[in-house]
Amino acid sequence: MRTVSVIARYLAGVIFLVFGLNGFLNFIPLPPPGGIAGQFMDALYASHYLWVIFAFQVIAGVLLLANRYVPLAVAILAPVIVNILTFHALMAPSGLPLALFVAVLWAVIFVDVRPAFTGLFQARSQPQRASGWTRRAVTSSVS
Image (cartoon, rainbow, N blue to C red):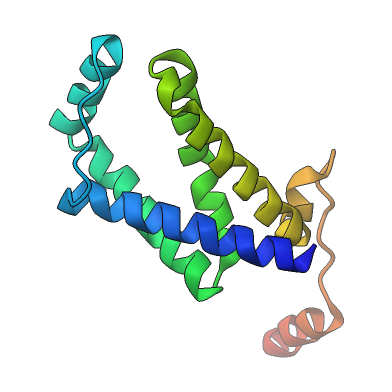
């Protein structure tokens, strides 16, 4: 499973780095989508909203390829992938296969770094107890 996760991490890293950079440099010319998808994309481009999305894609792609802060990259990409899936499912179904492939890659990476997210999946928050060191440091500074 570790090998599959490494392959998924590199593939996702390349995909997000290339498509994120393409948003800034336009080295892969893509035809604009028609209909409501085109209107939606026009609004995102006109508002410069996509610059933020492309920046997140580039940052996460670099983190995945460098194998540094992978849980952070996974957290950054989660909402990006949800929006990509929603866009393609509702407005441009021709891109849905690639969007699903990227979502599967993300899931494989997430399973590998799942321990970093254990605190998010607790039903109730646990109060943190002060450690002995903290208590001693506080009491010694007060005295």
